[in-house]
Structure formats: C-alpha cells, structure tokens
Image (cartoon, rainbow, N blue to C red):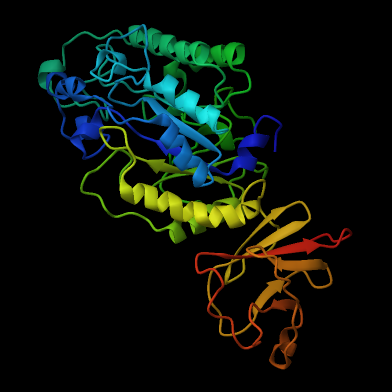
Length: 434
C-alpha cells in the first residue's frame, strides 16, 4: 500500500453519483446513444433542468449516515453536459434554469461533512462538434450517413477536454480523485494525449488519485496490471458491476488497489421504473467481499431529475448505515486476512485483529482454520460479548480447526445475531503469525 493510496484503501466504501440531463428522461444515462438521438432533440432537456430540489448538504448527510468515506459526482458524462461553470462551453448547468454550479456546491457540502471528494469526467463527448461521430462505436450519430462527411478536428476536442480538466483541477480546491471514463478500441491511451493530462495533475493536484480508464475500462484494466505500468495507468483498477473472484495483482504478484463500482438497482442514472433495488444485506456482503480481497466498493446513486434521492435509495442507505455504525471497524482500514475463505462467510483484517464475517447459519459450530493457539480474545463486535473457542465431542476428528459457537447450546448455529453479517472480532496474541 503506497502512501498516496493509503487513505483510499483505508476508506473502503464510497458513493458514486450519476446525475445530468439524462435524469429527466428517466430511462438510462446512455439514452442519447441508445436511441441515437440528435443534438436538437436531446438538447431540449436543458430548458427543463431546474435542479430545484437539489440540496447537497442532504446528499452528504445520507452518504455519511451510510458510512461512506468518499464521494464522486459526474461533472460531465458522455452527453457532454457540464454540471460545473466551465468557461469553455455554454452547455452547462449555469446556463440552464438551475443556474447553479452544481459541482462546486457538491464539493463544498461533502468536504464540510468530512467526506473525501472526487469528480467523474467523461473522455467521450457526444455534444462537442469535433468528437468522432460517424463510425464511432458509441456516438449517437454513428450510423447517420448525413454526418459522414461533416468535417471534424479531433485536436480541437482534445484542447477543449484538456482545458476543462484544467478548470476542474485549478478552480475547485483540493480534489482527492478524478475518475476518467472511458477507453475503448481506437479511442484509448495515447489518443487522449494523456501525457498532457498527467502533467497538469502533477502540477496542480499531485496527491490526487485517478482511475485506470485513460487506457482501460470496467473490464480491460490496461497496463496497471503490468510489471511496469504506463505513466497514465492510474492508481486503482475499476471493475464494473462485478466483484473479482480473487484479489487483483499485477504481473509480479503485487497487490493492485481496486474499486468495484456497482449500482443500487440496474441503472447508473435515474430510472423511474427501475424498482429492482439491492438489499442492505446484499450490499453489505458485497462490501465485505471486496474488503476481504483487498478492494473498495463504490455504490452508485442516481438522483431524481429535481435533485433528490428517491425513497428506496434512502431506505437502502439507511439499512447499510445501521450495520456500518456497529461493524464499520471490520471494514475501514481492513484488507485480506491471509486465511482460507471459510464456508460460512469471509475474513477481513487490520494488523493483529481478524474479523470473522459470519453470514450463513450453521447446524452446529463455525470452524476457523489456521488460528489454533494464536488467539488472545474473541468478542462479538455488535455488543462486546466474549466468544470463547469451544470443544465438543463430535468435533474431535477435526482438531486442526478452532470452533466458535454464538449460542449457549453448542449444537445451535442459528439464528445469527445479525442476519446481514454477524462479525466476531478475533484479537491475536502479540507473537502470533497468522
């Protein structure tokens, strides 16, 4: 773990926020591309973007209550509409009925709440006249023959993009993360002139972290996994809508920081009909899985067009927060435990303390491998109740394991004290080498 990424890997849990013009349609943040909409059609949304109920302090309070330690907002998504007062375009929130620099307000509120802040910036731009269009993999005009012969100067777009990145780096105070999105075939790596971007980062925000997507994506991580990564490989990998089946390591086996970005339901942006929300149990278990493999989890919120969190969103965050308030120490600052994954759950670890995340009921004892004779004390994290290693006559044939019971009846491994995830804190002896 490097000094630069220390805070990030200690934080472990963050909030992603996708909000923009697409929220007004309430279908998908890629709707302009999916429906191959013209600028004339899509840009009618600008006059409807009021953000009239946007309260960044309320957003920050929800994130803090859920136990999130950092938050990232879409300053500009692929549609090109900016939530900040860029001097390089009129296509921005300050020129809409909202009339507000939403990025600045977001940053101010979340910093005030003690939450680290980051900005998402799309390398793609479907609004800019010089971004590749006809024949591009994703541009709304990719199949429009009428656009085929319209001249485009990609360098003009790059100058614009670099200029906007400089605005964000220099006009909005200290940024902890810049989340670039994304690279794809023919539009990756050197195409973005990343050396210029990195030079600005080193000059204006040298401690800021960046993701891997100047040369990668949510499935192709780029050279961050190489023994000698490129200068713009990023500080962490960003698997999307999945949790890697194992810790992410580079070509020589060294751990690579990573962050699983996942949605609450099935969409990043607001979808009015999508009520397929994940449960607090599922999110908590996803979070502990990430931490057990040395990774972070950033959970997305898609605010409503007016700028509020929906009721299902707030209920989910509240449920997560209730668990985190009691068990957060088993997440923050924790990582892999160096133990075989148990059948009943997972382990996380900080220093000489191991946290057993018991997630499945048992008909009997919960076996723990590799810790015989190494444990100083075990307690139930939720209330400090002491948990003692237990022997039982029918377990004698498997004496290489240590066994714990959560009830007085040694044949009773159900129900769990916490159905979401019952955490047992295991403090090792000072000389233990588990």
